[in-house]
Length: 120
Image (cartoon, rainbow, N blue to C red):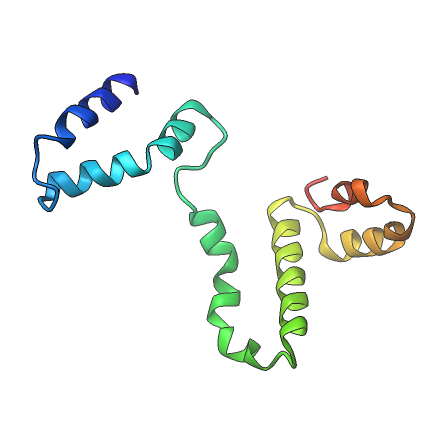
């Protein structure tokens, strides 16, 4: 990674910025921190296909959700969709999770709310 960064820095001043290689170098250099984080972590996904596939049903039905009633209702719907998608990703049964969460949320301290998320 250090060698690649040095090469990018060298080449940046030697190529035309509007050329294909110039654009590629500029883009890579602009994304450098993210690229390094990806290379150094075995947990970071290379793409966001998993998220894209998860939200596809929502995106396909977007016209149907235009009439949520209000901006607040649309925000609530978005949160519910997010929770349900997270349940699916975590192999958690959504009804069971929601029942458990609603049963325990009153007794949960504000800084402990994260414990009620589907991944936990």
